[in-house]
View 1: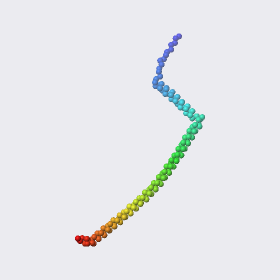
View 2: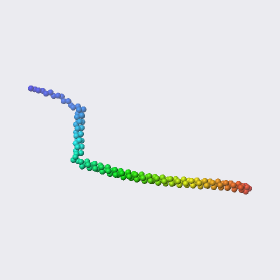
View 3: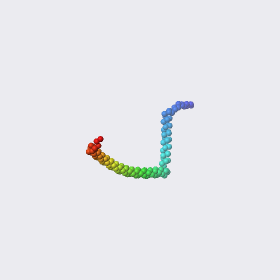
View 4: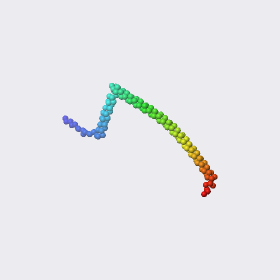
Length: 139
């Protein structure tokens, strides 16, 4: 008895099917590796490591908040100094402005007095020459 077996022709796996199968296998392997890594990292056997990292983070945040508070208090102190300087400079400028105004008024008063004196001198001179005109015209 001779039985002949028929050999089916082999069909190559197409590029699309091979790419899809390779992608799926790689995705599953990467997912499993990541899953086991996370499980190993956060096991109950290692709580001290995570607690230490949390404590370090809390300590650094606390330190930074204290430094930030110091900087804010320094800014407040500088603002107060600035306000006091601003008010003292304003007072000084007002005082100088008042002094300048009084000096200007005093000078204006002196100029007015001088003008009045010059006008009175001119009038006296013109009266003198008017009354003694005959004496000086003789030649």
